[in-house]
Structure formats: structure tokens, C-alpha cells
Length: 321
Image (cartoon, rainbow, N blue to C red):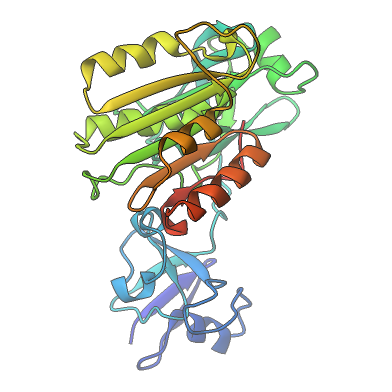
């Protein structure tokens, strides 16, 4: 028998009993459906240690790496602490240590925490303004480091309650609150030979840039293709950095795309997702990352699947800023 800790309560399992059965037997209401590992309604996360591999069957490898499991399949081999997805509600205090204008409507923001940060490049966090509690979600654009720093690309919206404040009032030295990282859109180093296709528009580049840096830092040997799109040149705010990466890493390829008129010859003319899918009509075995406007993401996901990509290999968080 083992013990399961959930929501500050501890329960003892019976012989061959799953986590789901133990919780339900103790009148703990958690989501579930088929009880057979198919619907994935009973998805939970193991804190501190690793769940049995048999309880992760059918999950994306990014979920497995974050210790997610299916409660209906999990028969604990030792005492475990579990939680429902995205229920870690504690906030970390972070300080603004750098703020740079990347273009007319994009600001680079670097934050530093006094406490260790657990995240993968490409995930997103919630940022909270301390004076009134306004919260917005932004993707992480850097890989983890020992300095406990996070980088963001903040798109400034004309009437954005949070982003306009970032542009006009937020200064180096000020404090913000930060949530725990969430999302499955990140690199997994175990598949180093797999070709990667990354498609983003606007500040959808932020998580993709982090994923690319992560892949290259792990010496990813497969081809990496990034298609970044905007209507005008100012939207391609990281162009020089990305072109530098192509010179340093032969397996990294960058295609900047402009959908406006009078496009220079150094850019591909058209929408980034259309250009990418036309260039690679067969996507069997590829891993694909998408970030941008919801309509673009949904359309590209559907077309990529029809062109051979496995749905388990297409990563796109609902959050797009």
C-alpha cells in the first residue's frame, strides 16, 4: 500500500488500486471519463517524483517530461503527491532588470526572480501587476539559466490595459508577480534527429525563439526551419539575431515572410504558414510548433495533419500574445 497526497489530504491506496479509484473512494471529486486511459479527462500531475510510465501512455512527450499522468492508469509504486493541471496558485515576486524597444510595437522585457524558476523555453506564464491585480499571459523566450531570469516579447496594443502600461510606465527596478510556467509547447531533447518546423506571426516568435535556442543548445542534429510572418518589416523585429543563427548553425534555416505590398527581395512574399506548408508538402515524422493568430494556428494545424503530421507532434498553445 502507498499513500497519495492531494490538496493537503493524504489517502492510503488498496492493493492494485489506481490513483483515481483511491480519490473517488474517499469522496474526492476530480475530473474523469472513460476510466480506461482513452479520454484523458483524469489528467493529473505528479509533484516531486516521477509517475509510473504505464500511467503516461498516450500523452505527449512534453507532458510526460512534466510528470503528467492519467489517474485511471496510475498504480503508485511509492508515496506520491499529485495535483490537477494548472492548479499551482502561488505567485513569485520578480524584478524588471531590462526593458528594450525592439520595434514600434514590441518591447523586450527581462525579469529576475530571487527564487529558482522551473520552466521550459516556449511555455507561458501569467504576469500580474501588483497595484491592481491586472493579469496577462506571455510566452517565455529564453532557456532556463542559473540567474533565475525570464525574457518576454511584449506586443503593445493601442488600448492594451497591461501592455500600454508596460510601454509607458513600467521601469527597470519595479516589481511584478509571476505565476508558475504552463503549456506543452517546448523542446524535448530525446528526439535530436527529428526535423522541426516552426511557424509564427508577430510576437508569436517569442516561444519559437526560445524553443530554437533550446534545441541548438542541446545540439539538435535534425533540420530546423523557422517561418516568421508579419505584414510589414517592423514586425520582423528579431531578423538580425535570427540571420546570425543561420550563419552559426548550418541546420537552422530562417524564412522571414511579409504579407504586405512592395516586398523586398530578401523576404518571402505571402503568409508564413502558407509559404511553409507549400515548401514542405509531406510532414510525416516532423515536429511542428505554431504560435500566432488563433485562426492561423487552427488552419495550419489542420493542413499539417492532412500533409502527414501526427497530431501528437503538433504543438500549439491557445495563448498567442
